[in-house]
Amino acid sequence: MPAAKPSRLSSSADINAAIERVAPDVLALLADGVPRNTATIVAALADRHPKPDVKRAIARLSVLGQLNLQGSRYTLPAAESQQG
Image (tube, rainbow, N blue to C red; front, side, top):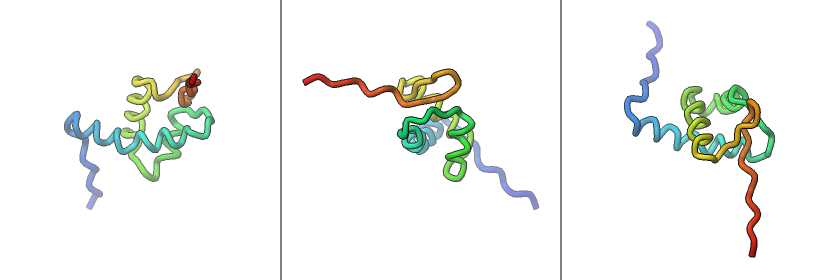
């Protein structure tokens, strides 16, 4: 008997919930300052999150300006200096 396929995300609410679960792990992974490409991020989080969810989270974070894309690698945006 074949294994059951995981259920697909069926609504934007499901997609948003998946991104909310994955985004903190993506940000934590990049917090060390090492630029990483999508495949590397997906591989690093493969034991915790499905590949499509990680890719969606990366895309959302990038569009919102929470990730910078330099070449083909993502980093966190540089912290802006705060003046007294």
